[in-house]
Image (cartoon, rainbow, N blue to C red):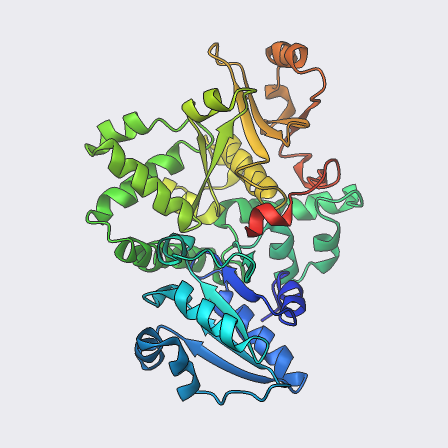
Length: 409
């Protein structure tokens, strides 16, 4: 298995005394990444130990007391370090207490490198923020660049979404790009050539792994949670009207809010806030919802048709651009949309410095519709992104990328 792009950052941070905390949705490859970091350290003649907390043999004693870790490893000498890998740390009853105690009492003799499948459980169970003791790394499903790399198109992967992409590449890239738009970036899906098998894998992801999120979040009506995911998939890029969802599903507003919270914390759905000068106004306005993975979005939309045969191809492209921006900028701070009461709209405003409208083809873009925006915000240039030019667009080349502090907390 080829390494994910995040591997080098994890290897570098493995030498820092802070806890290395890797988070992301299930089945994005976190366990594989931890194993690859461990393999690297073993080659450097370092001492390592690997524990998965899906195994009750480790979970029970670790829950009983953090120092029970030393039932399984020797406490290193003062001038030595053991690199301890803990996979699925959210299964601990009190993960923050476990990590804090080991960090405070045994650093640098013990270096902790841990993973968690959902920040929902980490948020709820981490009673202590571990401020100053951790560095968080987020592993999403593969972006299109990693998709190309894993499929053996390294020369394209290096140039995609950069200032160096040659137009000569575009024809061959289009078929690969279309595949990515339809089936997304889960590693098992990317590395499977059969389209039929891709659909089966996405179905298994929804049935098995999202079911785990539902069970561990103690949601009492999983069918309603799935139905809400289907509604959001059918409204990609539209204003998310929670009252309307309440009426359709016949559930309370607080339940819809909680379901949406779990979807975000399980890394399946991202929300984009409106752009207003007034923070109070911004908080009152509806958000727009996008999926963090295109394949999962299409599974819940019930549509794996080719891109040119789809009525929702514009929505799909917009979701792709959201994911592209989400890989470069902070969703909560940097990515907004703009809309007036007269329904004048711009899809994305990045860091209040650049605006982007997404249309599948250029002829769908009508200049006169954006005159009001251009007059109101003359210092925010507006750019059109389409199916034909999006691969040449460099999302990080025009403005500063997001602060690691915002992402890592």
